Image 1 (cartoon, helix red, strand yellow):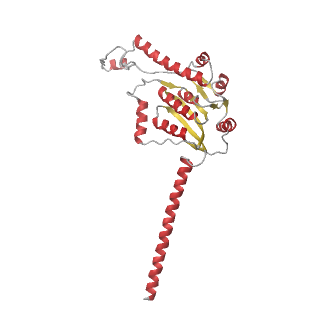
Image 2 (image 1 turned 30 degrees about the horizontal axis):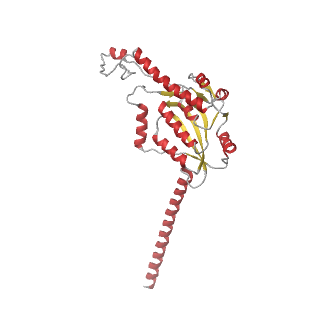
Image 3 (image 1 turned 180 degrees about the horizontal axis):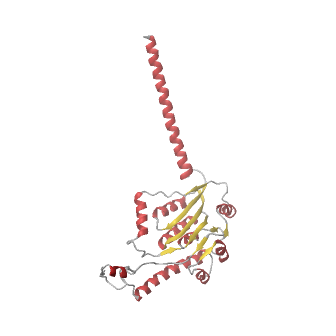
Length: 294
């Protein structure tokens, strides 16, 4: 009987030890996960330099803009580096991103680093920064606005389809791919495009310290290499992220030793769907004002 009792006691001790180590392992793994999350994705407890990656087509993105608004108020983020590799996007998308970046720049230094391409709406975003850096071979500029549409009347005639449109005025639903564009409609649309172009030119003149006539001369839609953009005053210097950190240190006393953390823009499924539908628009035809670079 004594041996059985000792055996039972030993078994209970072993179970308690196993339970302790299992709990210890769970707590340890949870702690590591918390440290990784707080320390690398969304740093909150130590100073750092934030980095925002802008790529692909730029569209209106409220989730991104809210993240930037939060970043503007984050005292731990001492500066923002924007890495840009984008051909452009919509007028509203570029404008919204520009305004969000300017809001950040009111509280901390912002520097833009251009990659392969930073044209049109991407250049609009870049001029929100306090300093713009590009490679010699970066492609930028393309300061302009375009609207594209198509006329499918000839195709519809061939397959025996006659579209009918009832509208309140001759300029309603223009441009329209199922009816020819009238001279009056073309003039009205050209006026909208030129008004948006004027807005873009004013932004360039203001942010790059140019008289408007000089900015207008550069804003004929052409693209520039990084070297050409530097000579034209569209950027500040040549280089990459290393030069950006040096500028932050010399001009703003933001230490090069501070860690850099990417700004995480997390979207749920509904946000991704809205972002996609916002790009596609109300039809499958390109009938929206765009700032496409290439």
